[in-house]
Image (spheres, rainbow, N blue to C red):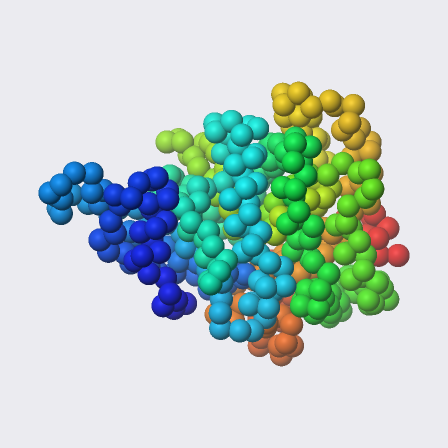
Amino acid sequence: MKVPTWISKELFQNALRTFFDSNNVEIVTYTSKDAVPAGENYTSDLFRTTITYRMNKSYPVDSSKTETMSVIVKCGNEDGGVKQDIAKSLRIFEKEAEMFGRTFPAIYKILGEYYTLSSKCLHAAVDPHAIIVLEDLTTLGFKMLPRHVGFDLEHCFKVVEKMALMHAASVIMYEKDPSLVKYYGEGLYADNQVVRAWVGAGYNALIDACSRWPGFEKFGYKLHALGDEALERGFQAYRRKLGGFHVLNHGDLWVNNMMFSYDHKEKLKDLRFVDFQMNIFTSPAIDLHYFIATSTKIEVKLDHIEIILDHYYAQLLANLARLQYSLERVPTREQFKKDYNYRAFYGLMGAATVLPFVKASSRSDASFEQVIKNESKDGFRYHAYNNERYRKHMEHLLPYYDSFGILD
């Protein structure tokens, strides 16, 4: 990717002056490179920028005394095409700017600064160009895990613990100021023409793939029989229920949107969520279904889904109790499971549309556009839905979702 010409020394200088709350910051140099390889990010362009700066605290200035900082720069793609269309239709930069500008400060005020769910934001703007500048979590020892592998139970527990913390705080936040969730009415699967084209193409590709998996033809037949109703059931699954229990979901919890840190013995220590462009205020089942479908190991999908759900529910209750929220207003375990079951089609939609990206090989043609428009056997879409990694996961997920009766 080419760094946009409008990303400038002045932009970084203003960002650091805001971050340090000082006008004495002077940028000396900066260099940018791609933050992730092709096939690892789909909705924005990511760059890792190393900034050399100095603090002009006294005069005359000691020009030899400089410091460096690494930041992640997220910017909107302005080259046209489906990637830009999806970003605009989902208002992803407006959402993320709102998250860092208003929502996270409100959440951290409730939790206390000790609890960190995200990186720090140095700068966010949507006009005239969409850009967000974030601290580089790799400099704090955080790293992503290989997306092809997925998370074991220990990592899954850490994810749902942080998920439950964010969800619990958002319940309190909403009661204090409902306006803080006005941007989060729709998430990744917003009901619009661009998303419909992508999801529809995903279902068709899955139906086609099932026809080549011995013993799985029946799932392809069921999906095909549903036709456009499959789209409608997926969209219905994320919608809020009148009087339901609602939280601020991350909305896009797949492997690359979580970074972990470890101690000197490589024992799992902490987690940060990244990429807050798909947040949605609705049932917590949405984050759970999507995470289980896209990010867990096959062994976890086989043996540990109920354990993960139990652990999440216990953590949610514990956090709400600590925040002095009346637990009489929280769904019982039975009501929680009933809501999770009701929204099972959301998990299937994630498995049919996002999991193929997760399990695909790193390719230069990995994009929404290729999934929607290119049906050739040498294209990304065919590879994503017909590679062995994806098939192995779907061999467990298709019977799992069918067990809810959602394909009938």
